[in-house]
Length: 323
Figure 1 (cartoon, rainbow, N blue to C red):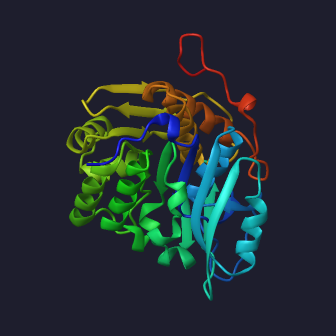
Figure 2: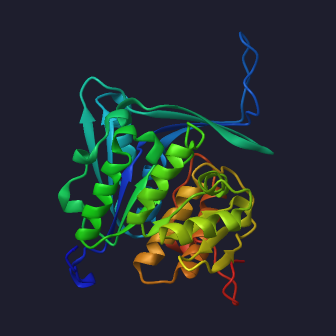
């Protein structure tokens, strides 16, 4: 039996474990130019990335004491990340992998098209539980993000990490991201088994449909919640979020209407807003409403300036639904 840990003894922080990399965000690219040709694009932004890093940065900007755990190489990219991640409220624990490169993702965006990503795992390919210091397990939440980009830290190793975090008094959260292997039956069973150690699961619409092998998002989320006993919060893009409790109750949280300047990292910003509010004791529905407002705030900012303060977060309507 796990020891009982009082909330009063748990540090008031959130620990984020997972993919830390450099993002190269290319705007205005619906398709690659023909071989041998060149295309001028509206902008190319270089910044810290990976769903774990994006979430941790947003949490710190919301005023939450945050620990970010990852694995990087010993190269100039890692030194750039050190400088960019040096901000108030964010403590980084980035293990250096000698002789390896830091992970880099190229994200291509264009109006009317889904984002496309090209990623080199680099040092992430060897990240395991030894990268996570024991003293950061005790937190309000431990989030494992970018699960499929951490091949060594999957299945039983992830279960053990979540179990240790729970023993230390943390609630647990998981954002798998998209499975590059396209959600085989074996992978679906792996994730569903892992969810038994997870308090809050954070998929998007494509991921929850693939995991449940159902076309309807609500039915898929309800199926996963009831089977795993976890709260499922689905990120639905421009439609906001869907909160499904373990007993199958469903609540929709619409998103504010904003002028989108850069949608990369929207789901990670949502995760940050949601977990920040859950750590403060808000209900999952209230936390999800705040999450969609944080995400809308972030994506309405340009690629080169994603910094904001809590006072910048878009307000809720008087009836409690996002404006």
